[in-house]
Image (cartoon, rainbow, N blue to C red):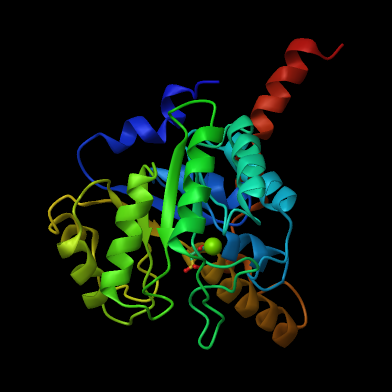
Length: 293
Ligand code: SPV
Ligand code: MG
């Protein structure tokens, strides 16, 4: 199966410049990200877990992540890069997942080198055990062989910095995952400044492009990232929409409680007509006019 031109993240990776993705928890958020002009949607395990009010710790099943990614993909024109955690188990789970995400029209899958079940990367005191390089290169090779189209992007995610294993091990893992066939390497860091990631980027061989998630080092701008010499191809703002939504909804609910009514909150909400627009009610009504007799 080949992806439609606009969904082809692989083709876009060979264009000049950074690709900017934003994390979504559902199709509505994905549609907002698309309408705002970003390059791709990250179907985030953190965001989808948060939407279910459960920890991002391999608790939801692959099917739930797949469903979320499929709904997102169907709602938008831009590609979805699926956060596939550890691949949901061993190589058999990786093969199973890659085929299903690809069949759902998703543009690519990212798998990380943590042990299943994983703990979320930015949690202080979280379990950050890694699988061996051999085990993880097996997963990358399995993912690459399982995809039906070479356009399906396989991202290998290195958690060595998150696990406190240091830059040398992170570089070795990245090199080995690229050698195993990963189209890009996501290097994650929970340091509070960009220095750790910048140090990695500077030493990276540039064998394949890099992906960054600057949640914990938000001072790194896109301009500064581009200035790192073109080794970074994608930046993912992984969880800002869900965090903004929680803040807005908490404040709204507090105001309703305080005012004992909904007479003071119009300014805090979009009108119902905006939701109709995001639901594309207009297309449904056009179809009714054409076909409904
Ligand atoms: C996600 O958004 O689910 C990620 C990024 O994997 S992080 O939460 O920082 O691990
Ligand atoms: Mg995740």
